[in-house]
Amino acid sequence: MTIALARFPVELLKLITTSLSDNDLCNFALTCSIFHDAVHGDKVVWRDRFLSVYDDPVNKISYDWKATYQKRQRLHKKMVGLSFRSGQSKEELEALEILWDILADARGNIPAEGDPVDGRNFSHILPLRSERAIFSSHSHVDEHPLLSAVSLLLTPLLNRPKLAFIKGSQEIVYKPDVNRVINADGTPNLSILNAMARLFTWHIHPDSPSDLFHQRTLLTPGEMPCFWQGRLGDEGEIPTKWFGAYMYSNPTRIIIYDGDELSSDRSDGYLVDMTLTISQSAFTGIGKDFDTFTIKSGEITPIPSPPGRLSTVNGWKKVEFIKSYTHHGWFYSGIILPGNNMMLGYWMRSKGGLLSRGASGPFIFWRAPESSSLLNRDNRVSFVRVTG
Image (cartoon, rainbow, N blue to C red; front, side, top):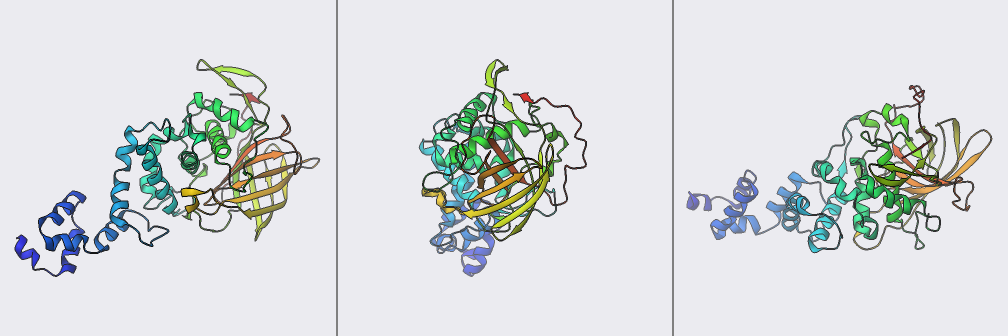
């Protein structure tokens, strides 16, 4: 049989490999030099195998289809045994780099409003839901940029962080002398952004014991924070419909929860429903949380990507606007993440003002389906203003 197959045109041999498993493909290549050349003589077989499972990569120049495919296939096996306690071991770094590359290449497609995100790379990302706590509850995540970035972009998986690590997130988010989401070099401050994402995830997660944002119980699965459409880092259009939440930077007391001391976060209890009108890099808008408001003087400005491996993803943007009620207004400054699906930052009394306790705080907004609205839902549910 081998001799007969060896007489087949190489194009037919390549076609035969498409029906083989990974192990069978390797064994097929070991059978004889003709089969070896058919598999490894050029990039066709491994490229086609790669593209049958993953989205096409952003940078295809000198791309090693075989090595990348095999590394990605081993990712889940590595994830099971890794604790990511330091984010520095060879195995951890390799797994993080592979996962970052999968995220960077991920091409999202949402067939209809509210439907789960669809895409070849997302089919490999979404099963990490059970492992998401590895990133969101990690004690050293803020000390390692790649770990922070991966955790931040996986926020839509919405695995609730462990309570013990929320304390660390609070310390980062509420620390008055570092409460800025943009570094001195103009790049995003991944440590603060990730701490914000974890802190809000704790409070809006469907299984969270927190009642800080009571309206989270009114959200449908399709209205929770979601992944991006298109490819991460593509310019794309800024969404016009956003839901969100904000807190005050003045936890006023210590509570005991599950035997652990925790500062109590504070909010007005209502989620934000906001619709924007965007013209190039400027925008206005309207919305409501505890009261109606307008959005004024909105500006969106591209900023540099983090250095090193993280520079493979562009699309980070600075966002600033004034949220104005009838008798008062607040200045919002933050970052729109690559993919245009989420923005995180701080609100304060005025532009350039200090993040004083009680007069400022963190915020999160996420893209919502265009047809969704919180305005006509039952918002009479009782809520607690000060809670853990």
